[in-house]
Image (cartoon, rainbow, N blue to C red; front, side, top):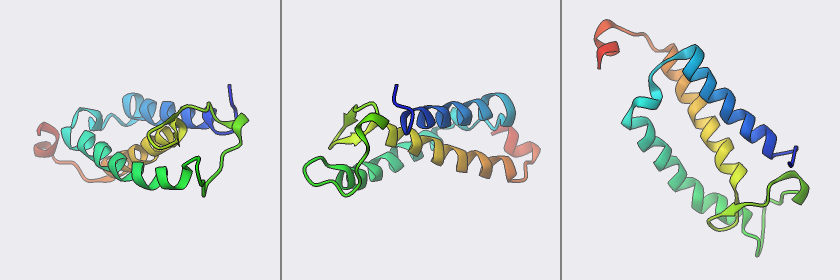
Length: 108
């Protein structure tokens, strides 16, 4: 398994998901707005990341031994999506965890 980029990407997802499910418990993963946010972010990530990583004229290059080599649409390494998910989710979890909660907010 490639260690340089793949393992940290997978670990980032595992840590963020575990933080939500075990420690923070904000309920973020149960919210439709969160999943819509993920879709919107991914929708913008695809054309930008695809342009940066296209194999025909890459601006960003990855060492072949550091990634799995799995690339989905437009030559985007799968690891980029993992890091993107972890980053966006971590920021939203921190935001949710830090905002003041009232009894009314907890029931909605």
